[in-house]
Length: 199
Image (cartoon, rainbow, N blue to C red):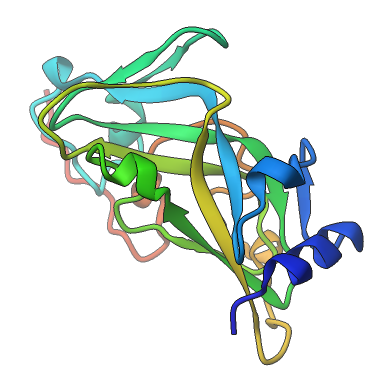
């Protein structure tokens, strides 16, 4: 069951779902979803500095990226075939019995822009801003602007509250996420350490 616009307004009013800054209901609330806006913060890959990404090396996925910030009226141009990380302007907090699902906006999808590669689930107990896996599958560059509505989130109730909400997980790598940080797959507890040859 997906919450309707009426339910979303109620849950926001009850502070069961927290969105900060508070959304403009007139423009951001859909029939069963809430639009979130794009921040001016991005993480871009520096492909020319590394031959590959080693998923067993915790430092590799961080060192291959650099942060980039654009001003409120400046475009961030996403070129065909490119992939970058962005982040929502809003911080979102979910209770232990509601899950969110990140979706793209149709108007951007029709230009070839996707907002998530695989990570669409926003866990119960999530607290933080939401990283966007932005890619351009179209034929032309597209200018994206900070503050524009870039994605939507739907909300679904769980049958029971989860035993371990995201904010309580010991291995939660992105708890209180506040920047477009890169992958931390190398920090997975089941990931063997990278084997590096001696210099």
